[in-house]
Image 1: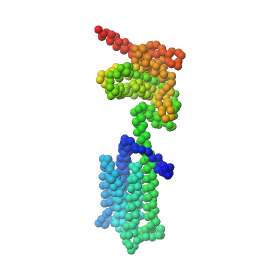
Image 2: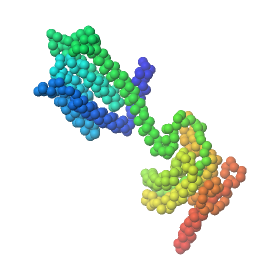
Image 3: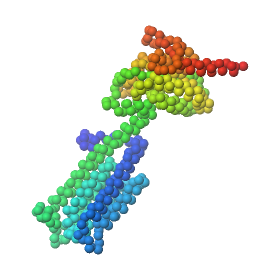
Image 4: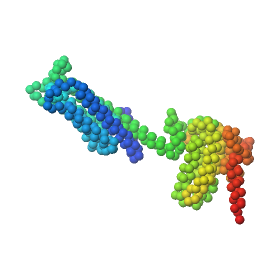
Length: 453
């Protein structure tokens, strides 16, 4: 039974949707109600136009019910549309509007026999009955099947009442016939034809209600997934989140892509000393201010923070997003980080000098881990070089150390400060720093020495 229900109505979300997801769905439902209101207003204008253009066979009659019905329905539609834009559509009003919509439509159809001075059976053949199905379909815009069912029930009840009125209004002449030709060529009533209309209303209502329920469940899951993706982008970069959520197939462990890119490892100098002087709340606030300032620089030059680890950032260029000038942008980012580190003061007067290790080369961007727990990051030999360069800044008295590949791929003033043998490599790797950075540090050191007593 459960399998049949899932086949007909779709997969049901288990558990309670989070409040923020329910709020997002509610906003979409409100937009649906606005759209319903505009379509109804268009229908009113259509009714009015058709009535204006149609010949008036009973123009001499004192009472003209059709324009009254159209006017009343138009007024109700405008009120409902205004209520939708003011977000004042409680459930009782929505249910009431369903029956009001159908009641006014039925009254409009019923009034035709008075307007045109014909027997009551005359209105049963009015093509306006087709609008009943439009009104039922309109409720599907809200993705709530109960309103479709209410509308269908109101339509069926209304049409049954219309047929009974015709049959019972004149007991001496019920106008009932079994001759299809008489039905088509006179005001006679063919019960079978009216039953067909009622069955059609019920079938259309059922199909749309099932479709709306399936759509509602898909909508709930889609909004939940969208919210999850949005939340995910707060824990990983927006670019990584988009890559994960838009992948044609689910990302598996080991899935990766080899590219030539640039990497920065950035770490706060003496962070342990800083953290000892701050409470956990103050430390969190300082780190948030620090990362926010650094992210502005990184985003400006097209970098992507692939990983946070404590106060360390792994920043990539031409890994997640394409960047033909990745080496240059990596260097501009490292320089920008130094400028911010020198100028910004965080919390209660804390400065956070930041060391950067920059390297360029072939890297692999992809997922590592188990099938149930993955980390989307970069790895490879060139990444290891960048990771090794960052802590070497302490040894060389610098804040930016650069690998040889980055020096060759970018146009800045560099000077070699040494070489290092990276784990897994036999030959030493040449390392460089910016000439301007070295000069700046030397000036700062000389200034400190001059100020000593």
